[in-house]
Image (spheres, rainbow, N blue to C red):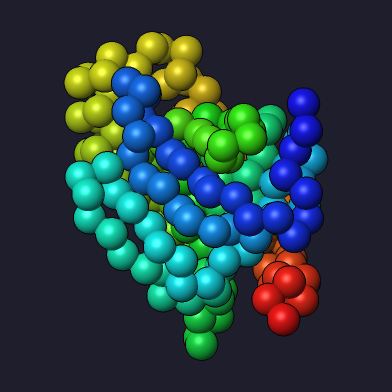
Length: 176
């Protein structure tokens, strides 16, 4: 299987557990693409919601997707620092059409001072009942929340100092 090459444009699609599309991000530039990790960059791109709404992102962002972990991260570059939005979801897959993952509702927002807040626990509880999330998925996601918080505390992976800045510099090279 081939993976997206650096410099190529891809679409990112998130789905819900029931198989329905949730959200689509257009035109993310691949900065690194392997079977284990895809790192991308984008700026003011179009996002399409399943209900037909559309909006544009407000700032440049570096996205980190992992094929081994049940979370992905978006580092948003703002004037007052880097904010991270972390989605708890399935490891990514790539099928030549798009990078895809299942969004499992829980999110963690990380602030520039590395404090964080767990979000959408009520949405997770509701969808867990509505879509009948299996117990093993629930256990994986709970472990993944703990693992993600550990990464934040350790400043591991995309939370490492200069990670977002380094990849943003590479993203700017593709935009010239």
